[in-house]
Image (cartoon, rainbow, N blue to C red; front, side, top):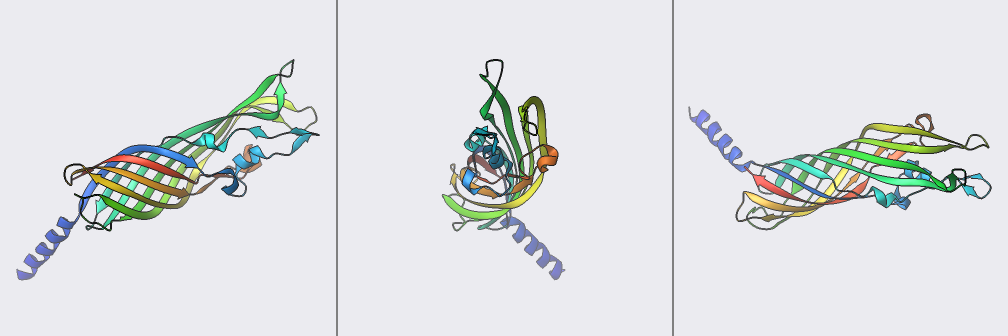
Length: 242
C-alpha cells in the first residue's frame, strides 16, 4: 500500500510539471540567396544558362527574392518542466515568380515576351525543442531551440518554353512539376510575451530551415537536379496554455 501511494504521488508530481499549449500565427519567409544556394539548384540553372545563339542568352529573367512569402503555422507544445519544451508544428507556404526569357522574344514583330510562372509550395512538418532560461511564463521569456523538419514540397514551371535542341528554337507550352519530401534541420530563437498571466501569450520567433529537394533534372524537364528549400522565417503568433 505504501509503495502504491508513493508511485501515485510521484506520478501526480510529474504530471503537475507538464504544461500543454497551442500556438498559431503567420510570418514572412526569405529564401536562401543566389550565391548561397546548393550546387545543382534549378533556380540558379534557370538564371545562368549559356547562349543558345551567339550573343543570345538562354537564361530566364526573374528574381529569387520573388519567392518571399507569408507562411501560416500551427503548433502543439509540451512543456516537461519550467525550462524545456517539445513542439510539433505544421506550416503552409506558397509563392511564385513570374519570368521571361532574357534575350528571346516571340510574335511576328519579335516583341512578345515568352512567359513562365515558377511556383514553390512547402509544408514543413517540424519537431523542435526549446530551452527557456527564465522558467516563469508570467514574465517575458526569451528562448533558443532547434530540431528537424520533413518538408513536403512541390515546384512547378508553367508557361512557354524554347526548344534549344535545334537551331530553329521552337516555342512550345508545357508544365513541369517536381514533388517530394525533403528532410533537414531547423534552428530557432524567440521571445514570448505573457498577456495578463500564464494562460495567454504572444510569440515572436525567428527560425532557419536547411533542406534540399530533388527535381528529377533534365529527365523531368528541369535544368537542375535540386531545388534549395532553405531559408529564414520571422513569425508572430498567439499562444494558449491549458
